[in-house]
Length: 179
Image (tube, rainbow, N blue to C red; front, side, top):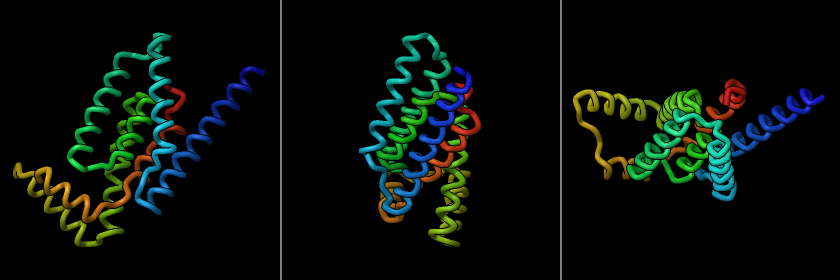
């Protein structure tokens, strides 16, 4: 009987996380916002889960590094105006819930695919030309400065949270049992 209860609990958690993340994705596509009323509690739960795991001694030093480096990277990207604050809180909440490199890989892959989709759907050929120019300039060591990134973000800000959410859903169903 405990095995059935465990399976039902795992399925309930997966379905709940899927519903929350898909809700975020839909809300972001419609409003271009990540609601703090939901993401902040998710972040607090993630931090609490990580602290409990640390207290129980079941969190690895690698997991703490993954979480710490993710937080630092997200704060830098937020300060550069690459992502909004809600996006950063969502990513940190997901990593706090599951400090696993597989989730980081899925988030990175989802972000790249999401950005390409946003460029193609939102800006068409002009977006692809801007992306190609960015790659050419980056290959020559010329990167946009903070002001250029900020202006581009504010003028053409597109929803990207859906990509993080879909990566989170993929993680929940493919890798969740490992954590």
